[in-house]
Length: 312
Figure 1: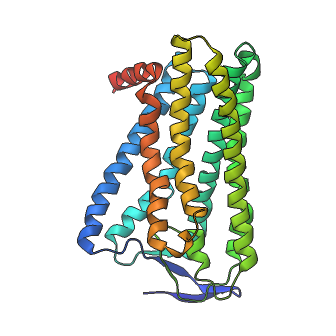
Figure 2 (figure 1 turned 90 degrees about the horizontal axis):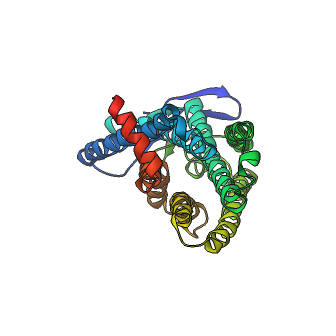
Figure 3 (figure 1 turned 90 degrees about the vertical axis):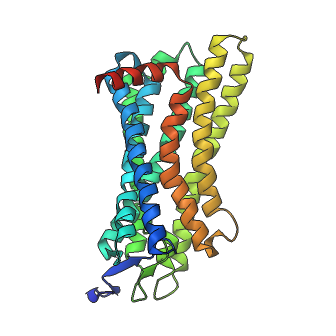
């Protein structure tokens, strides 16, 4: 049941109910088992890559340092939503406090923004390495790499300050049932006591801006990378460059494809069930696929993973 109490003059709902997936309790148990194993495999996969880069001195290069940070980001990303989703699948109450919901929204989407920045940074790294190979050691220094990594983390959380501030000012007075498995912006704004078009427009503009700016940069970078690779004589160097770029572009396609389907596709906002499954894909499936994609055709990562597994 809901708990109502006036904690602030702008809103009176003290907790929300996350509706989750519209299915029977038996199906929820099956979903719990599926998502639990996916969660564990994601932690193991990304954790193993991060440890492999940490322990193997040969992988202490900018490309692999970025990959290790990206894997750590994926661990944080999946932990921002999946544990709560798993608990709700076994719970009858499925409640989350008002402050907890706002906090989950901020952390989840800040990590999402951080991932967009990281994908752009990884594109920058490959662009410099392939298009300017002679200058790569002097451009992509350890200091610059650390600065850019820090900027991605800080930038992701700063980017969401405006949306979370606006969301915290939205009046909620009931009903308090969020038709989602996490505190999603659209699902929460649908519960506002009064229309909030300025908040909706501003949050939509912030999301669209970061998505298209980073995507355009990645596409522009890889267009130049592809031209540079095609000018390289056929051989092992060309094949390795293609392999590395293909892995990155596969991750970009999975993440951006699902996000754009969610926020750009006409009519998606009126289909809450579709929103849940698309969100599920980019918040649960892509963190699982990414370590597989990056390690599948990378000999250095495979060798480092064998070392890590040998230590366990």
